Image (cartoon, rainbow, N blue to C red; front, side, top):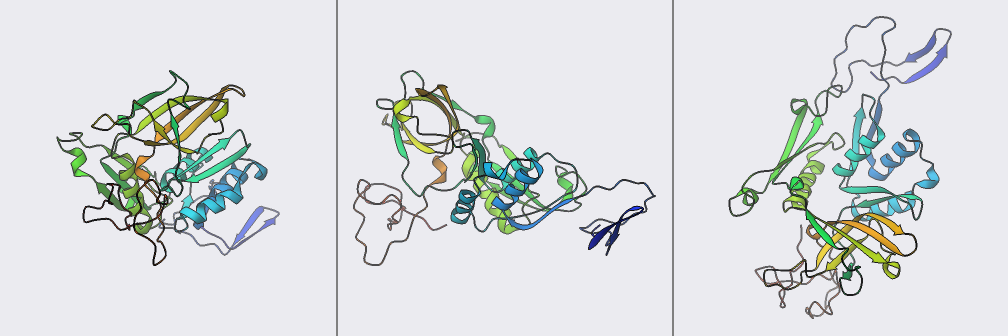
Length: 334
């Protein structure tokens, strides 16, 4: 139920302008003394604003610890069309709500101990060329290792959205009015992984197919190949890299079909100074599927000069196979 105003009285609190049976529920009889649950409602709000409200007003984190100015810049730059709508009808931990938002808005949120701030980053294509870390010049000898994460592979992404009854469990598949499924049948064929792997997302924060469809597609793109985890250490000269940074790794442990080094892109998701001021240890997750964010160049711009001199995000027209003159992949409109 909703109300328009409330006032203290000798008998407690008096509510005015009551409307029962809201949000798809049915009004039912109750007795004096029955308990009621206060709900939490968000309606078409920015991701960064919802996170700020949850962390400051419900988790008790000081506003001075929230990097909200940079949150807003990140949101405006990479996900301005994503707005969140939800009605939380049961006591739910802030950590669970933030985890849901992170998945459903395709973003990271974490505590950065160096800056003593909570950071926010949208998972998106790259708009600047990431630095390359090599075994020869950066990574400490013997510290580099890789691990495949087959349990995170996805060949089908199912996104449920538009709750039917907001008071029932969000993991009840029959309690959703709509769902969007993205499938890669090739990934399930005998030529690739030979079996399906389904990820179900119960997207209480996404109110429309305009948001559910991209989430299903992004999830499939991100996880259709087995994600890979990298662990490595850097010494003092390179320990400026930290959680949230994206880097390329150049190593003999990452090669193509011909044995040549393949520059693999990774996002650092964990960092720790194991020897303060001297050595930092990192864990990173593969991010090669995110691609680039290209820019359309001005009329009259020159032809493609080759990867060595072309601007990292400059968009050039490729051939019918989608590649440029030196074999590089051309920009695509999506």
